[in-house]
Length: 249
Image (cartoon, rainbow, N blue to C red; front, top):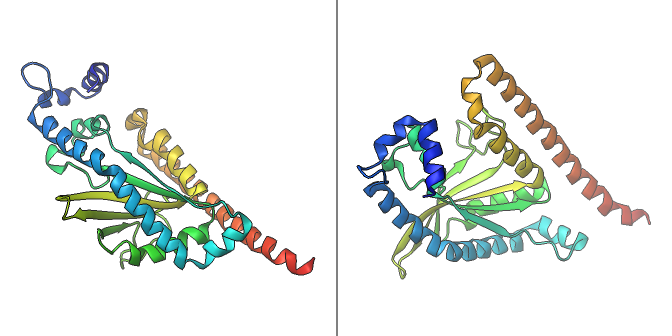
């Protein structure tokens, strides 16, 4: 771990010192976790390759994909990935949001599929409910969900919109079993998630803000989420109108 980052974390979270050994270094828990991270990083490409195969099968079953290929024959959404660094979990441990026993988190390996259109994302979400439950993948949970277990339009507390699958990737011939997450979202949903994550979720200065102030921010983020959802819906309608235009030429 970067020494400067370690020093900054200790300054922010004095309780983090309890995780250090007598020499000021991280102990056995870190070494074990880094070993797990190393294994996950080694197989990240394998998971990504197999996920892309799943997406390709979904697109073969998709009616909207055929329509989009006529608009842009080169368009094909690609899986992007990241392995959550150990540095990113230190603050969570220091703030006691999680413990070492909670590691690795189920989104340590994260994958994302960004779609141009809302109906495209919705259709892929539906097909993934089936295709992502075939070896070597098994779906373990879906988010966000309603109380009845159905897909939710958005996360009620934040306004977050995305279709997230937690999964297990198991390859007996390689002796591996890894947990990961696949997020399926539109370009606009992704923009909202990126801005809210860095500006609000990761913003330490908000910790001292009043409850009323935070509630006002949440309301504004919900409003922005709803506005972008409306724009996403308009984009779908405009695409369909352009498709109809050729009938009148």
